[in-house]
Image (cartoon, rainbow, N blue to C red; front, side, top):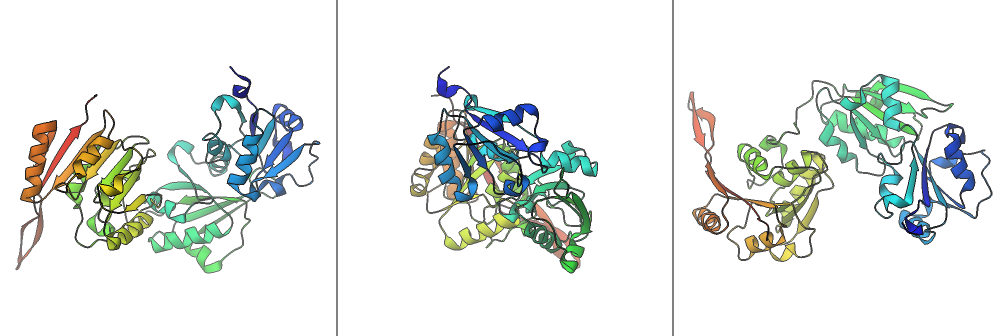
Length: 411
C-alpha cells in the first residue's frame, strides 16, 4: 500500500457539547492535526474551546469546491475534518468519499441526529424515514408524506420548520405533529411539539440548529410509493401513460438499487417520476422535446418529491449523446423515429433492458419487427374503466397498449 493510501484524512463526528463529546481517541486526532476543517455550524459548538496550534484552519464557508481543492492539495498530510453527528449519514464524509479513496480516510462518528431524535421520541429507527433537507429542496419531503408515516429530517435552519409546515398543510396533512429537537446533547437542548397548523398560526421561534421529526396525520391523501399513482396526480396534456399501463410498464422495467433509467419521449414524466419514487437510490434522465411538457414534468417532479429528476430538453436520438449510461431504457414516445431505438440499445450495457410502449398500428409493427430481431417479450393490454351510460354504468375502453421488453445479451 502506498503512502497516499494510508489514512491521512480523519473525519470526526462531534456533538452539540463540542470537544467534550469526543472520545480520547478522537481528541488525540484533533490535537495531532496539522490542518483542521470546520463546518459553519460548528463555530458555535466549539466556541470557547481550546484548540491546538495548527498550521491552518479551513472552513466550508469559503465554498465547498474551494475548500475541497485546498484539502486535496494537502493529500498525505494529516487533515482532520470536524462534522456534526455521523459524517457518513447525509454528512460531509459521504461527500468527501466521492473524491478520496476509503483507504485514505479514517472516520470516527458520533451518534447521528437521527439516532438522537429517535432516542428522545422513542421511535424505532428502522421504522422511520430519514431524509436531509439541509441545503436541499423542500420538495424532497413530498415523496415521504403519507398517512401514519414518521419522518426525521435534517434542516438548513429554523426557516425549514415553517416551510415544512406549509407544505404539510397544503398537502392536507395540517394535523401532523411536528417535534422540533434543538441542540440535542448540548446544554441548550429543547423539544417543541406542535401541529403543522399551529406552527403556521403562531409562528414560534426556533433555533437554527435543529432536527425535525414529523408524525404524519392519518387523514391526508395517499400517494403510495408503489407504482400506479392516480392519473390526477400528474399535470398533463392528455399524453400520459395511464395508471394501469404505467404500473405494468414499471413492473417490466423492474427498478433496483441505484439503477439509472432513460425515459425517452417522457411527456409529463410519469414513468421516470414513479421509477424514482420506488426508492433504493434509483435515478432517471427524462428526455422530452416539447418545452410545454418539460415545464409540466418539472412541476410534477417537485410535487411528487423527486426534484432531482434530470430533465433533458431535446429530441432523441440527438439529445441522448453524452448522457450517463443507463441500466434500463423506456421508450414511451418515438419508437418509430429514425435512430431512436438504435441509439438507446447501443447505450445499454450487457444485462441492461429496454421497454417500449406503442398505441398505433405503425408502432406495434415496429415492436413486432424488433422482437423478431432481438427477442424479448411482447404483451398487449386492454383496459376498460366503468363510466356512466345514461342512468346506468358501462365499460369505457381505453386504447390498447402493446409493450415490448428485451434484455441486452453479453457481447
